[in-house]
Length: 198
Image (cartoon, rainbow, N blue to C red; front, top):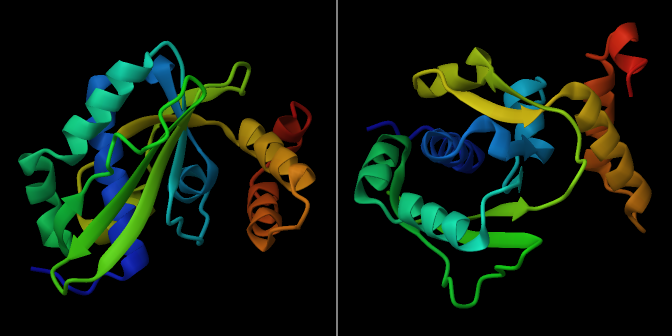
């Protein structure tokens, strides 16, 4: 059993395997990965994210809630995570979790084999005209350290990611260093053609 994964890597493999299970349940047109995990899995970001954000559409509140809870409470799902240092997945108290028509939030605790309690959060938002999403394979450079099979996830493209980051930066009362870093990371990958579409 490999115990050499850092706490950030343990969260990341949880996100990756959750996305794998989630993508089996919903068509790519119904959801899009965004934020820091999108940056990490698709845009060469060296920054790990403790939490994961996604947009959803069409899927109703109850269906999404029940599907997410079924995934994270599944014994087979937990068993798949054990080689990565995760002994147990503690789901949220769904009676207290935020579950509205605009936001559905799942606060999760990952218990390692060393009995470390790692917190992570998966948040789903329902917003119209959020940008262009595309189904693509997750970067092999991200997957290689975990020795897991490829997977295709629907995520926001680079133009949309840039716009989302600029809006995040503009909307904050206090500038977050991660927003500046992410915008720089994206800017190094925008071609002149892509930049003209933003």
